[in-house]
Length: 312
Image 1 (cartoon, rainbow, N blue to C red):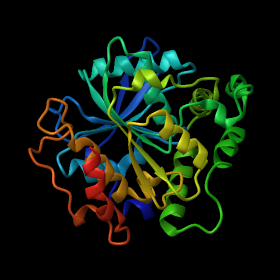
Image 2 (image 1 turned 60 degrees about the vertical axis):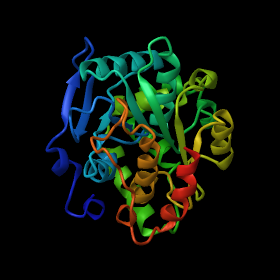
Image 3 (image 1 turned 30 degrees about the vertical axis):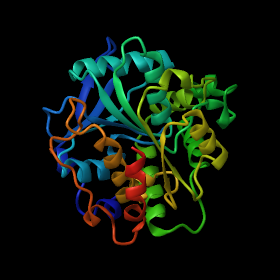
Image 4 (image 1 turned 180 degrees about the horizontal axis):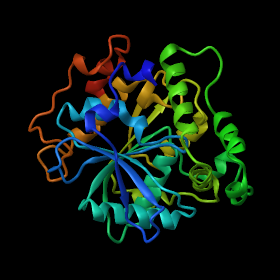
C-alpha cells in the first residue's frame, strides 16, 4: 500500500475509521471514514466495489476534503439480499442525521446506489449519483444461477473469481499499483463479507431506470480494458440519456485510484451544480478548478472541463 499512499493514508486524514451498528444484529458493522466539515448535511458518500473497503477512496478523501467537501467512505456489512442492504443503508443515513446525500458508487457500489434510489422513491434520500465503471443488470456476469451457492464457497475460490476480472498483462505503473492495492483490500475481506457482496453483485436483479429519471447523474467510464465491456458502458449511457458522461482514456477497473486527479475533477464538476443550495457538499462559497487539481501526467481533464461544465 505504501507505493500508493506516498507516506499519507486515509487514516492520517480522518484519524481512524468509525464502526457503526444500525441493525439488531451486532455483527452487522458499517465501517466509515467521515472527513471534512461535519455541518455539511448533504455530503458525498462513496460506495466501494465488491472487492473494496472504505480505504479504497483515500485519494478522494484527501483531495476533496482539502477543498472543503465532506466525504464519507463506507464499507458495508454482510447483507444477503438487496432489500436488507437498502434497509440497512437507510438506517445508517438516519443514524447520521442525513436527509439527502450524493453518492459516488464504483461497480457494485454504483449498482447498489441505483437500487437504493429505485426502492426509496416514496421517500427519496439521494440527491444525485456518480456512477464509475458500474452496471444496471447483474446478468452481465453470468453467475445468476450459482449466486445462491456463494455463501458456502471457500474464500480462496471467491477471491479467484474476483481476480479473474482484474486487468492483467503489462500495465502502466499507476494501473498496476491500483490493482495491487485492491488485491490487498480483497485479502482483508472475510469469507462472509466477500460471499455476500458477490451474491448482491450476481443474483438475478436489474434497475428500473424510469425511477431514476429525475436524479442528476454523471457516468464515468474508461476507454481502456476493465472488467466491464464497452457494450455494458454504452448500455448504461442509453439507460440514462440525460446523464452527463465523463470518459477517461485510461484507468482500468479502479480509476478513482489510478487516475484520481481526473476522477476528482469530474466529481467536483458534478457537485458544482449544487453550489449555494442546501444540497451543497462543500462549505466553500466558490469552488475553483485549476491545474493544481490535475496530476502533471494527465492533462486531459483541463482540456475537456469547459465542455463538460457547459453540459451541466
